[in-house]
Image (cartoon, rainbow, N blue to C red; front, top):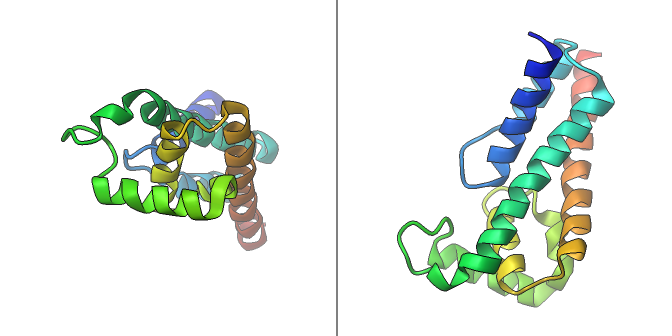
Length: 146
């Protein structure tokens, strides 16, 4: 597998995992580390950038399409939306550090857009959380596979 294929497949997997599309970028990252494909630092950067880019799509959906949240095609259910609003209103901006979590992470990023969180604040907090997650996954992978 070429370096371009390694990095582009990891980017696409990380991007889709941050949206409501299926994806398991942690498994792919772990596999690449185990098989010694790519450079560790670059793998971390590509996974983080791809995952944050997916969250930016969610932010844009929240920002520009929230008026259509009652439509069937809207990517977050009404219950998911209300749950995320509750978290966001209760805990504030810092919840964006948890944007990497399954189930609640995607709705939180949509809510940040819907509630018009400043984009740069959103970008910094989401990036920190997502990088931290990939760093943890990579650390475990390196300790298991050397």
